[in-house]
Image 1 (tube, rainbow, N blue to C red):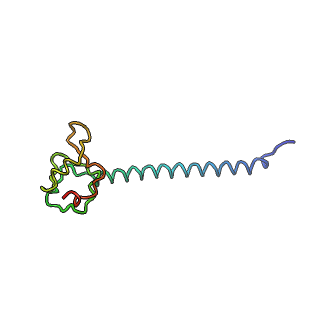
Image 2: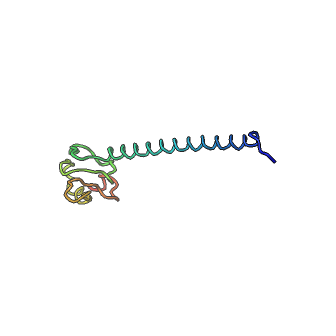
Image 3: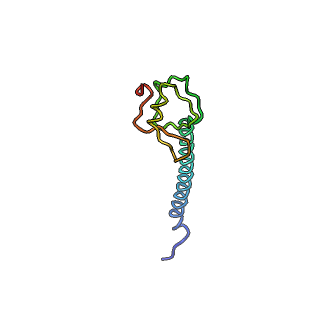
Length: 110
């Protein structure tokens, strides 16, 4: 039996539709990855308190875990020592610290 172009048309149409779906999925995946990177960048910026002057800020309701700070960050005087004890330097000699997990907010430090 000889095959004609009409015999291949439905399969070809299915293959083209599938290729379009794959292209759309790949574009969507690329956008999702970009959004994920943007969210991570925003989160990093929100957690960055290096060089900040927080000495007059009421931190009682601020979630502290994961906040990054530097030696020049100014904390409320009554929290400075505790913040230092609850923090770990990100890399030796970097002067950048992060408040370790398990620290809910400043009201638990008082």
